[in-house]
Image (cartoon, rainbow, N blue to C red):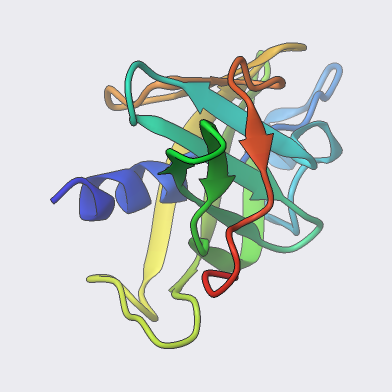
Length: 153
């Protein structure tokens, strides 16, 4: 099943602060929350049904794959998993290390629920790059989206 691997990747995507001339002492410091440059929704525009999203807020990340509604021929967000109580380190050159506690939506549980996950990400103006082989996410979806069909939200 693709979801556990996606969730690990999701856990690996939550960082991005642009800092100028960060000293080594500042870089080693953990900061609460997420860098402002990360705080919005990022999309993976994969082929076929392999489309995903990650939304970063001030203190957590939420993401999952998209579901497909064949009637409207549009994609909708499946309930999100992610990390809460996020913190980050600036590693320089727009690279960050994020760390947070894995959580699941109501009524489900992921493999690493409640455990601390840490990962690295590089942020540019238009793209998130996850280290360790995860896909690149961009700011805009290239596919038609909609709200979840009745009964799924």
